[in-house]
Every structure is written in structure tokens, then in C-alpha cells.
Image (tube, rainbow, N blue to C red; front, top):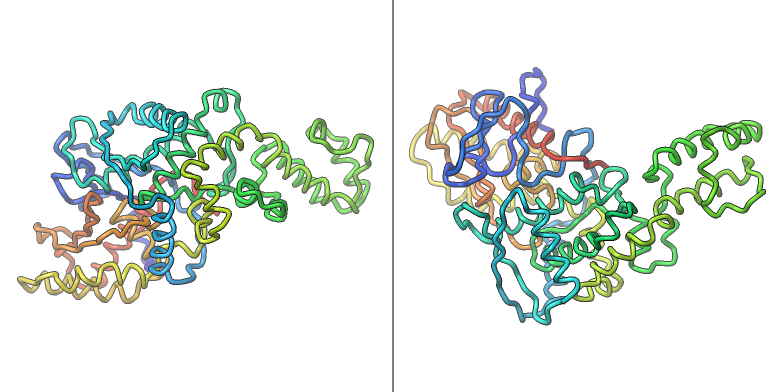
Length: 443
């Protein structure tokens, strides 16, 4: 793992799109602790971490770390083939013009309409952001999906729970407007277009949605989204005797048992304590939010996607976070190999920078490779559609920190470091930025 043993790496983040002045979301680490957002519309210096366009993770303590297993390249190809089979070859293009401050409202309205009147031919949107140049359509579409999903997760609070094991909110104002149905359609569209999944579903919820009668075996006490119920179950599990259990049940916290379907008058003792905890988890994760879940299912059945989920287990990782669908060091090396081979060296500084980066790629761990991928692209999980990564040199040979332009997934190598250790520390800074980048995601 690339760690800063001297503790000199900046605990900050520059993700998404940096280093290109023509990109409306160019992020540069600069040579200070500030982040610089450059573009045709504005240049803003921030003393705090920037709100990047993908907006999903807030600090490293909230990010899920799973062992990377399997061959990601093979997984991506297999997943892409599975999603292509869903929509076939008949695809039309249409344009959505988006005003960024109104993105959630525009997206919800659009996907509600698609839910109510599904098109016969699959429509693949071309996103144009208002008052911005029309860059690569796929990159802006990924950005559009990610901004919308972020709004649903963290701003509109359509989901509750822990990290990437979330369940839909059962608040009446969320369900009355069919927002979860609209979100379900958007998730399917993002998947079949090859842009991104939505790996945030609680595993028990996922299996319930696809009709798995054994979904209860995936329930976990720590996934209970209701704080009062979670606190009560934790107290129950800490009990050591029947008297302890009785005291917990009869305490003020025990009121949460009422109305959940636990047999009236049935005493709770050590021998059936686990049954009650399981019952509480089932009620909190599934039963109390049936209306919201049904609406989500309606949206996810767009293009009969639920049928595909039931028959193709490979698709699960697009909705439930999995170590089998993570960026690995080998995947990053493979994705960068062609660009590195083509990278022309014109002077000694460029030659050293290229050599340093090749050494760094040889040392990088799977975990740090994921964060470097995130730094380059603005996405933590690999898209289904092939994303071409590129490497180039910073035209300012004095710069000492890496930059990235996510519009075209390009990493910009610094030339100003005196030796490999200084170069490595500059990338530690980039990885630390990526680690503290977005929202509330943990295992």
C-alpha cells in the first residue's frame, strides 16, 4: 500500500476532472493544500474539500474495503454482454438538456414519465449541461446518473441505513410521489447503457426484491436502519441472563416491540432472544417499508430487468456491493498499458516521470489502485462500457502533484519531483484526496 510513513501527505482530495482548463470540472491538486476547479465558467479556490460531480463518499472511514477477487476484466465483459441482451440492438438517441441546480427535479420528472409510459425502443440519452460545451456524451451521461443517484442517496434522503447496505425510506412524502419508481427506471437505464450500477442495496432487500424465499438468511442486526430498534437489539444481545433480557424488554427501549408482529404475551428469554432480534431486523429492513419496496420493484422491472436479475446471478454486483466488481491493481495496469506504451518521451524530465510512474504501478495495491482510478475518472466502481484511460505529461514541468481530467479519463503526470520517493509521495497525496472524496459509503 502506498502510505506516507513520514506523515507528510496532505489529507485532502482531488477527484473527478482535473488538469484540463477546457473541462468544466477540471480538478487539480495544485502545489498546495487547496483544490482548484478550472473551467470555461469559473475558477474557484477552496480551502476545504470540493464537492465533486460524482458526490457519493465523504471520508475514508466510510468507504467499503473488500478483498478484490476474480478477474475484473472478464466480469466487466460478461456483465456488458448480459446487459446488451436485455435491450437488443434497437436503440434510439435523444437529448436531455440539464440545468445543474435543477438536476434532481429534471431527472425525477423524466424518469416518472418513462415509468408511466415506457418506450418500446430503448432510448439512450445524450446529456447536455446548460451553458456548458458538449463534451463526450458517455462521460456526461455518467456524470448525470451519478449526480442524480447522489441526490437520491444523500440530499433527498430516499435511502436509509448503513454504508452500501441501504433500504428505501418509507416516509410518506417519498412514496406518495413515486420517486422510488422513477429511481428504479434510472438505475436500469444506467446499467443497460453501460455507464454504472447502483451498488447500495442491502443484500437481504435485494434477495427479497428478486423473489428469493431465503432472503431472511441475509438479514444482519447491524443493518437495522432504525436507531431506536438497533439500540434495543444491541442491548438485548449484550444481556447475559434471563433477568437481563427481562430488564431490557421492560425498559423504555422495549416499547419498539409493539406493533411489529411479535406474539403478544410471548415472553422473551435468552433461548428466544435471537428470534426476536431476527424478527426486528426483518420488520425494520423489509416489512415496515413494503410500499417503498414495491415502488422500487416497479421501477426496476423496467425493460423486465427484474426477470434478468432472477435468472442471471452475475448482475447482482450491480446492485449489491461486491469485491468481485472492484478495481484491482492488475486491472488498472491493463487499462493504462496501451497509453503508457504510446506515451512519447521528449526530454529527461519526462523520461524520469514515466519511469517513476511505471515503478509506482508495479508497487500499487488493489486498494490504492481503486482510489487512483477514482482520482482519474471520478467513479469508484468500474463502468460496464469500456473506459479508455490515458496518461500524459503536465506541460508545466515544475508541477509536483498529479492532476486528472475525468472528461476523458486522463492522468497528468508531474515532472517537478526530484526523485522517485518525492514522485511517490505526490501520488500518496492524490490517493488521500480520493480516500476522503465522496459521501457515506462503507461496508
